[in-house]
Image 1 (tube, rainbow, N blue to C red):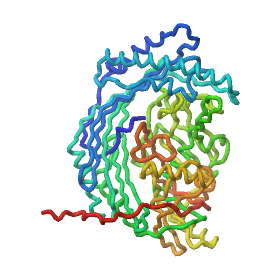
Image 2 (image 1 turned 180 degrees about the vertical axis):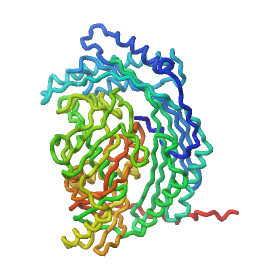
Image 3 (image 1 turned 60 degrees about the horizontal axis):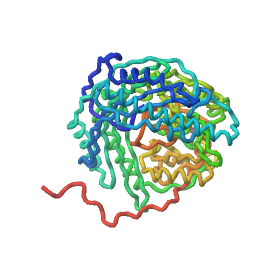
Image 4 (image 1 turned 135 degrees about the vertical axis):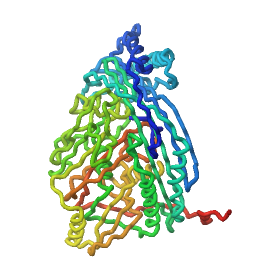
Length: 589
């Protein structure tokens, strides 16, 4: 887990130095450890609910990022920050101050900022002392309010508030960055200048970010860890308006946990060029219409689909204790209550593997040594022979599950952590050659008398549009009576005609697409494609989102559905610019 200030990618010219600092010489660990020893003895006079658990977490970050458009820099930023996490639980594991709608208001949110950037033991200890005092007092207030709320409520199911976990100690060497600002700015300029060859593209940018971080953790149960939490990122976006005002867009991104795993600049240029060609082609593509019938997802669209529909639903949430008469709905997984049910064809399996580091020579991005609860993860079979067997769990007990399987990777709500996946492997025991999937699609449209079938090669996932557009997608999905979760829009989607001809279309979206749709897969292709991205735990993460992010990888085969639906996007599009754009080549000599 890291703060979003560590992203983007580029040149392996950043010389990283591995620190040989021992745990006993690390000022941050020492400050946390020494203040923890004092904090465990804290007691408040006249209060029944005393502390039983404390944790200190801290992310130390150093990032550099540059954004350029058409060969010119538009933003450069270098930043250092230390982001703290302090939690004090009072009461007991059976009943404490967490899992209440106001837990964060009275508890962990009071930790505050102001962590010193210097490794001064005295000042660091002072910060944790003050933060512990504030959070402890807030936790006592929260449990009193929670208990008062329960006097007027009837709980349908009594669950513990905190699960036991085995203490862990893990110390990995940290990485000290050497910022190559001029080289990285040049990379951003050079990559963004590629878009000058596409004059019909009216908006484009390239972001480069190199981020170095170290994650620290100490709790009162004896768990401690320190490990490097680095993230490097290149993100390119392009957009344009068609003759009817419709916006078309495409994006390209590369993420890596180390600079030496980034593609060379020549490959990055090819990705940006392809993005420009895609947007230009979409401007000339016809607008699609409503459709119901066979649909094939191949290429990057296949792992995007599984990341969007399956991976985002593998973590369970728990409804918090609410105030009487108030409704505070918490979004639930679409797979809630479906353990033991078929969610995929009987010949498909799904495994979440946070331990594996490579696949087919590619660095897997979701690998991590220990989660935010201090629990060491292991590979987990989530779907076996099409049947849902497990969910991703933290130390917050949920219905049917008491303990953690080490998937607490992001901060959550109500004093808990959020469970998100790592490296997701979707495998099929029955496959056909990739070329035969298209033949099968054509056979199916012939049998059903359809003029064409649908082939999807790329989704807008993570979403590259604005947050306003994402909100409109969610509202539109709810109004149509489907899932309230916004569905990713197709970017590269084609009509496939009986003679095999493909026609790119635009202006359509999925209707009724959700996690239950995966049961209707009828065939899978041989071979898999990998998707690597940074997410923030939302069903449809935004590219370049703020806040905390976690890295993910999804490996999946192409899949064919017997029947999915599309609908034409009925929206009021902005008017075209009154004045045509200036030329992309200057007349000044």
